[in-house]
Length: 460
Image (cartoon, rainbow, N blue to C red; front, top):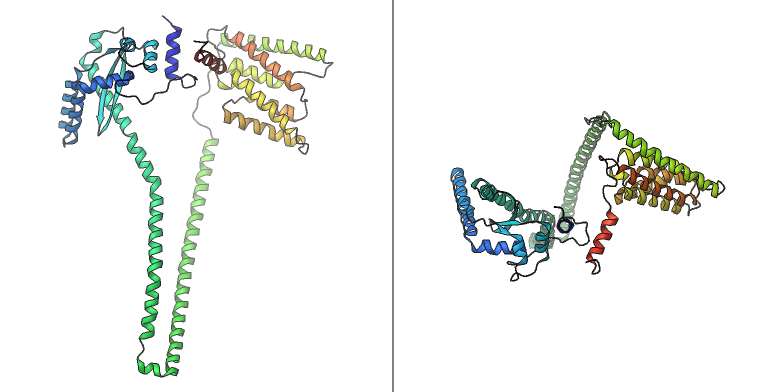
């Protein structure tokens, strides 16, 4: 039987969009469902069997021996899988209160079993829930128990691999910094040790002349000039050689970059040309006769009501106010032909039109903008903002162009939003009369209000 309390508890456990959603968090042994099952499994022989099996696996060089030992280990631990009743654990007065455990019991989870795992020091427990109405012999058969054991080890391995992956990503991010530090240390050490060596070399060169040669100043000065001339020539030759090498390297780098750019441009052009030829997607199937009749009835009824509204508004305003039928026609096309699509939902239709009206009104605050400037900016801004907010609605771009092109005034915006609300109300009434349609698919605003009411003390 359907129970609203069970559905509410299940959504609080699984739906993160709810304001009163209970997120999984770390728990202590003996607290909550996971903590209770962990404490029981730690004191049983199942944990010892799994640990012994993992330790024996680490030292086994043969694949056959590996398979036989893990199979024997899991066979030994199959008898230790204990299915506990969640309602009994939740109602036990000796157990500490845990809100998540109470929600499990209220949501209809009756039987639960915890299978521990130990993957190279990464320990945890996997919780399995069972249907209370199934045959207990099938639940405790060897095939089912072996499947649960192997599945728990596979899930545990996938959980345990997250920590090495995180450490590897951290190592990749730290490696460039460490390499730069090593390079900077080497450069600084080279600069510091180079200065004393240069001074010592100059001192050795100056002391390499004999005392007799020093007495002859003219000979000494001449030899000095010769050495400086030869050294200058060598420096110029080395500088010229280095410039040639640098120029050659730069030319090669430029040529490589140009070739890479040409190759990338050619590959992008070929990919663009292949995409122009189209993909392999099939043509969507047509509606059957009954659904076409529902589309005709809904569209005709909606536009009849809107046309009557337009006549009434024009009569009361002496022809100054009218409805804009082009975006409303696009809206009804979405509502009756793409009923379950996100762009046709009331949330997208209403909020995207509000954003469109606000954008056009903001652009009118800049007198320097011409009509063609507003006509180009308005749909571009509306389409980008609605895409970023996740409320894409094609008729909002059409209404933005209509209001930005001076076809209608600011006073028409309120009348147009009223027409959108009438179209949404009519679509809700007519689409839900069909067994094959549901409109809207969700009410996020009503669900948020309901969650706030249930979380308040008065609501409870």
